Structures are given as structure tokens and as C-alpha cells.
Length: 190
Image 1 (spheres, rainbow, N blue to C red):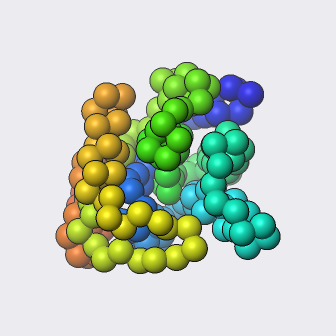
Image 2 (image 1 turned 45 degrees about the vertical axis):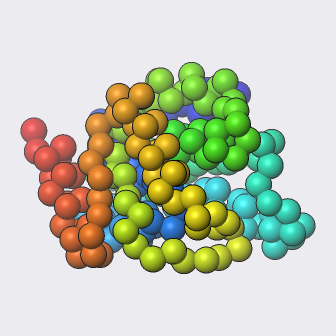
């Protein structure tokens, strides 16, 4: 199972939109994909859990985490293959395994061992930690608006503990996009 959580090796630069729920990750991922004319990988957990909610009125369980992580990595690896074939250079990922592990710790007070192993093996060129300075948007899956500050701190700590290259993205939509483009341009320039 562990190998289903490991990235395909490639020369593609990978950027992760990362942070607590309702902080503008998907919006920024779409903007960046449009700006760079590249692929972006949606958050697999959102579709998986929305389907679970719609069909069974059930929320995320610990047992859902591995299938979610595998689905996310499968989507990422498929996109990497497509980019390599088409000579692309950048992939935008709306979340990753590190994000799933932070949520696992926050909601279930434990992290699947295979996540820890895969996080150490997988590599992303840049993490964009989205700040909580945007309004909360309620939906079927978001459930803890009062924990945003605490969760943002946990996401930040995970980046530091795992020695990830990151910047914090805050401000208006335009400011966020400008900051992200500036940071991404630096990793794309040899």
C-alpha cells in the first residue's frame, strides 16, 4: 500500500496549495494553473467526502484517510505523466499527503504510519501556506470555523518539522496571486 502513496519521479516542478479549510487554496490553484497554462490537481478528499455525505450522510472516518491519500497521489502521478509527455514543467497540487496527515492528527489524534514514510520520500518544490485572512465559507464538509487560528498554526508547524520549502500567502486575491507567482517564478528559473 505504501507505494501507492509515493510520487512518480520526474523533472516536473510541483507546488502545493496547503493550509486549513476555507483559506482560498482551490481558488488560488485554479488561478495559478491558468496563469502558467498548466495542470492542477483538485483536492481528492473533497469529492470523496462529498460523495460519502451525499450518499450516506456520513462524515470522514479514520478509515477514509488511506483511500483519500491514494486517490490524491494517483491523480498527481497521472498528471505528472501527462506533463512529461507534453513537455510541461509545473504541476499545481491543491493539497498533499502532509495536509492529510495534519488533518488526521487534528481529527483522530493519530496518523497512519504509511503517511509518515511517504511524506519523507515525496518531494514538492514549494508549499504555499494559505493564511486565514479570508472569510470563512460554509459548506457540507467544513465544520470548524472557530479553530482556524489553531489549525493554521498546526499546518505551519508541520511544514517546519518536515523541513519543507514554503511561503505564507495572505492578502486579497490579487495580492495572493502576485505573491504566489513571484515565488513560483523563482523555482522555475534555473
